[in-house]
Image (cartoon, rainbow, N blue to C red):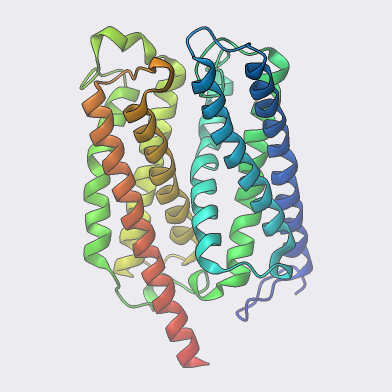
Length: 322
């Protein structure tokens, strides 16, 4: 059974190959995005910045994304190397959680957006003038390639390192952190409902002066965010209650990614809403943006905490049986 993982944590050759291809592919893809950001910073140093940004704001914003992309590249290499690099659990979980939360949930949006033709003039989320097509192509390949690579390599790596969290069925486990799971679902309910309303064309909480910012591309992103938040809430409730006879890996993987999305995107949007780089304006009222994204961050943290409690409990039982 060289292609199948076993209960000891060891994986077969086909899974090992898939993890290495996914990890190296993710690192290579995100390198393209890093190149574009370095070019933008160099151009800004020479005085070439978007019309609606100051030079310092633009450099700082892109320097942050350079650091994030460099971290993502290192993460891809770590996943590719597997057990050969024994990275401490805490930083590994945090960075994989944030990275997968930023990128993997964008895959459905990318697929639907490409069919509907949304985002053709998007600038990669940084605002400003429309970038040349070659830059946007590299950014798109970087994001999509990293997301696909993470979606392949990360579950295999985590299954190999923490098999107890992914093996078996939920019905064979005991209840754990049920109240925390319910609190996470409750906290995320408000942003989910509002995002769904905006995605459907509603105007609840939107600033009429900036209503035009909510185009098709943005509505698709909001709908994607609402979908993943629902998946996250369902996952942690299923894991915590241990009532379902689902295979444990499914809600664990979905919950990890969805909670990371709430935390990563909620934290990013919260920072932008508070700092407003380059006079950035949101489609919603500033107070609405701050409250919703703060709730998203809190919900994501509680979801991850619930999953980690389940992992510890499963690991303890597995050790006891051993």
